[in-house]
Image (cartoon, rainbow, N blue to C red; front, top):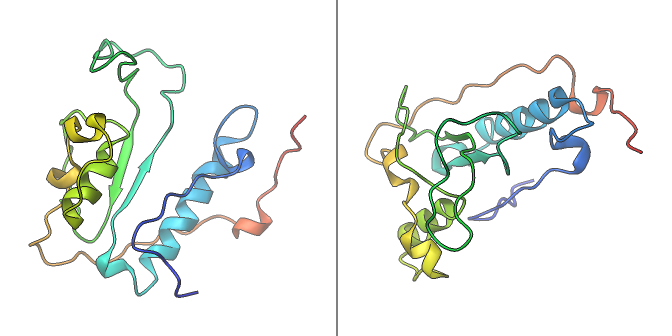
Length: 155
């Protein structure tokens, strides 16, 4: 609708979240629909979308979680950076945490860190190249429009 703010944090509903007992396909297509909408919008040229999961999903991770403070970081979770300035084919091995998104925003806009944890986080800046020619958007065709995806009924 032409109302995208400079910074948005989107959290899906439980049905769209990939959490059990829902079908993970629903969550996958939810994210795909959001990214397609961004890629097809006038905002694409100036955007970076960061897709993160809020936990590791219960799968084994051979790397012990680092203790950065009294809470630690927990097990690793995947993250995707989708942007016309994302470095093509780049796999970033920098250790980020959930506050890395905030750290990048603060750097980008010259803001002071909200907390000590944010100040110590690695910024997402290395995943992006703001000097490169912007990449063209790529859309992924969903098998069904989002409103037609069968949804389970949760207890």
